[in-house]
Each structure stands twice: as C-alpha cells, then as structure tokens.
Length: 42
Image (tube, rainbow, N blue to C red; front, top):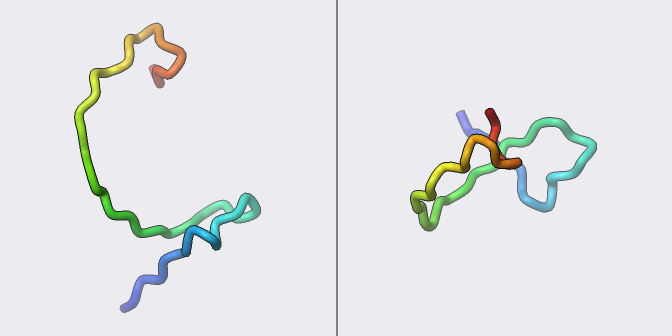
C-alpha cells in the first residue's frame, strides 16, 4: 500500500488535514519554559 503525501505547495488554509513527510536534520535539547511564560501550555 502506497502512502500519498501532500507537497508543501499543496497546503492551504481551506483544508483541515494534511499528510506530509519530513526529515529531521538536527535535533537539540532546549531548557523548558518557565510555568509563568506566555509560551507555556500549562
């Protein structure tokens, strides 16, 4: 079974779901945000 992926050009706001394939080139660790940060999800 072949999985079809959407190209980056095919992504637009009218669709609500996409299937994309990515390759991670570099992964690094970052310190967590403080709990009172505006970027915190808690």
